[in-house]
Image 1 (cartoon, rainbow, N blue to C red):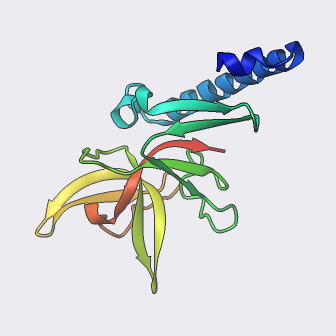
Image 2 (image 1 turned 180 degrees about the horizontal axis):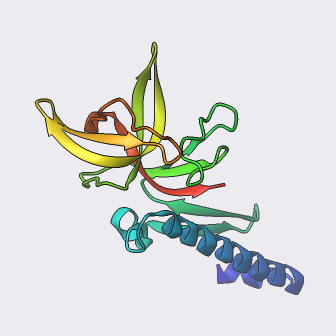
Length: 169
């Protein structure tokens, strides 16, 4: 990195420093948004360790990439989204979720899960409101934050895609 910076003129060095500072601030803002999104202040480390979040600046393309290991993105369509999670997750938001690796879910966690709708499988993002078990094993009852009624189905662990760790909007 030092060799690359040595070869740059003073104006480009200043621009690189400014870009790095701005992107670092963006990275911090995203990290704060992820942690503020969760239901309790001590929750972020439950799902994502700070050692799993890092940024890389590509000098050649002037791009900063933020990596959060083991997470995926899901877009909540502005037109097709139901608004069931407003205000927590507005229409048009991008949900950041982590696949489960043996962690235990609990009441209050927001999950992404597959559900049958007519003849297709759709992904739903709702909050766990209770945990139970029956002859088929453990299940979760869910509800959209903006819905009056709980969901009519039992969400089984095999239908869970991941747990929500953040939202970008």
